[in-house]
Length: 66
Image 1 (cartoon, one colour):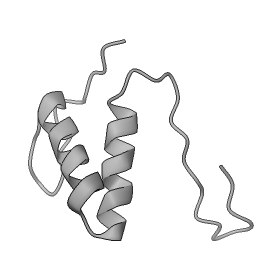
Image 2 (cartoon, one colour):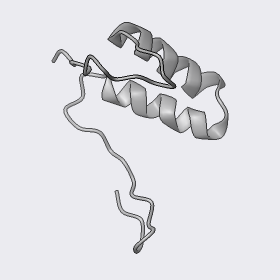
Image 3 (tube, one colour):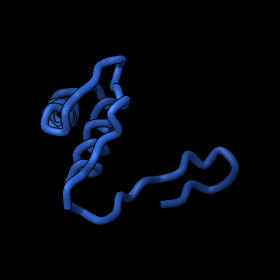
Image 4 (cartoon, one colour):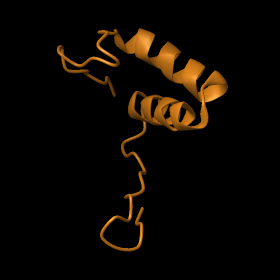
């Protein structure tokens, strides 16, 4: 499956190709601060060939859900 990223998608105001986003995701997942590691993991999941992404709700209105 080929992932298409919206042409106006930016991360911290910077546009990236899918390949560059994967590199950023890998870097954040391995070397980022704890909150950045979650973002890196999400980017890697999003840009993978997996058909779904598992996320958890914040729980602001009830018990967090997956």
